[in-house]
Image (cartoon, rainbow, N blue to C red; front, top):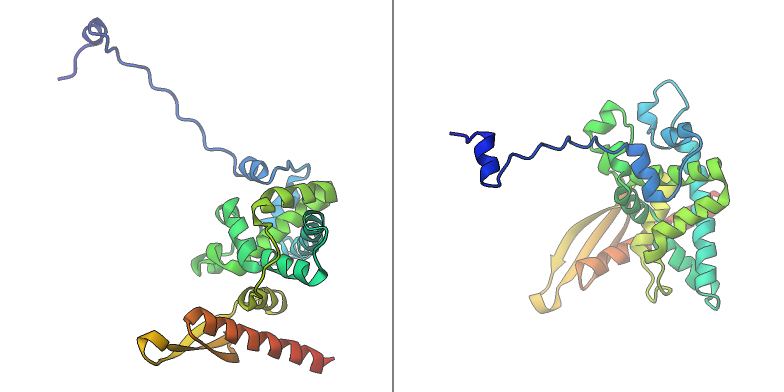
Length: 252
């Protein structure tokens, strides 16, 4: 039986009044705090967060801002690398930028600022797991950068990019990462991600050989071998990159 209030007060255990629950934080304000920028035009942010599937019959979606944000990201990261590594050669700077400005990294950044929670998707894209798709997350992130640039100019866009990518800037990579390069190329060229399929494992445990096939948009683009699954995937990615580059040359 619950004791009356006078008895609880007598023994120093008076019932404390309940504090009202705090209302949930506005998603827009939370995002602005995460990127370090406050929008003057809320409609730009709204557009940046709208997937084409959620804008049926209109052009009010993120693709144009994504296009702009892609260019701003390339410029801002290149400028940051030039300042951080004043004696580095162009090839190493390009490699470092490619390891940062790619679909996988941008998707992770989108998740870190919780874009996946507040994007607007059509019903079909929602059902198919669009909030976790690398291509959609990366595109939305680029669109937000494009929206910041449109709203406030280059300086705040650069500030946001430096704030979000400060921990990603390291020394130029010693080893070429073909998988990262291919992921970026596939996203930019086909809006698709590479699919790696382990098709064979041969040899004894101490000397196994792995064979991986790679596909993009249903096309077989290369088969690579290596002493580990990772090595076979890198080999396959290298062949796929070479084939894509060759096809571009031939098409010209």
